[in-house]
Image 1 (tube, one colour):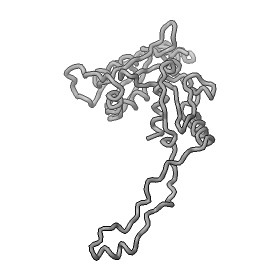
Image 2 (tube, rainbow, N blue to C red; image 1 turned 30 degrees about the vertical axis):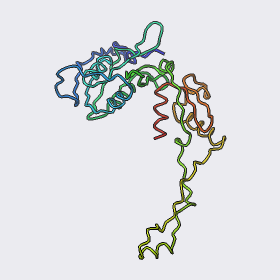
Image 3 (tube, rainbow, N blue to C red; image 1 turned 90 degrees about the vertical axis):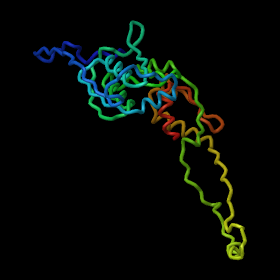
Image 4 (cartoon, rainbow, N blue to C red; image 1 turned 180 degrees about the vertical axis):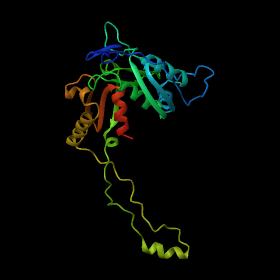
Length: 254
């Protein structure tokens, strides 16, 4: 599905009235540098891009071209974008899409997500992800799905287990009474480290089902999608997916 310039085009017929949509001159402001004096050095790896996309900016734009807004964000931050524009062979973003924003001191990530909410529909809405080279890739999920990675997740990191306080420290009363006589023996015994509980196969599969239910459910092969797949193996969840999906799973394991 193509991402159209807007719902009706620049010239729209609404009832008997013809409305000419004329984009207003873009108004930008930002807090990274009040008066940029030169190009900002671009990040070249994923770690640097994660830091940069968490930095805060102030952006106010009214009916401005998507391409212009992305260019402005590149000028004031170290982020470099890789927009997937539409062409004759591929669905993609329309650089002429008009967007409006009024955000103060918000992370670049939020600015980007608010931009993408204004283009496409609920099913084909664009997404973003960070590539290995640090560039922020933006485009339809169908195209981002062509760039997948394999990640192993420890299933124990995806669940919260209520601790079983059975091996609590014990108090040696005799040792405690002898401390007054100069004994250095601590009155508490160390219960030792509690071994990690093994998840049953059924429990592990249930975790996988929950991930597929709440994280981009339309993209998983097990749900009829084509973008991501996962398998349970040896107390691990093996996931092959694009980064915009992996990013949401990462948030669950923190």
